[in-house]
Image 1 (cartoon, rainbow, N blue to C red):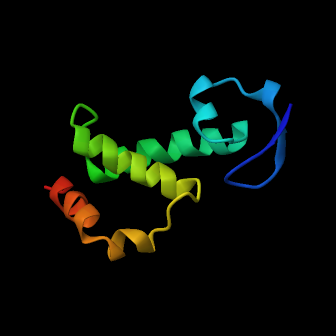
Image 2 (cartoon, rainbow, N blue to C red; image 1 turned 180 degrees about the horizontal axis):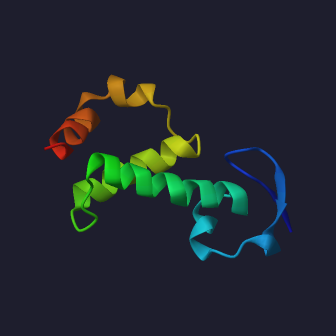
Length: 90
């Protein structure tokens, strides 16, 4: 079955997906690999601790922005969400 990638907009075959986690959003293997690399950079840059729920939420927001489900400007418009981001930095 063919799907359209949420990130790049290209068609990809559902059978080419090897990572089950990539089924959260319709994403091609290339974009999912890009997200995996980018998520490590986000975790390291923001010094996120994945054992903390608010840090997992922050990574989830970056994931939504990466796949175009949330715009970066929305973080500035919603101060409740940016307070959490500010509290993550030492």
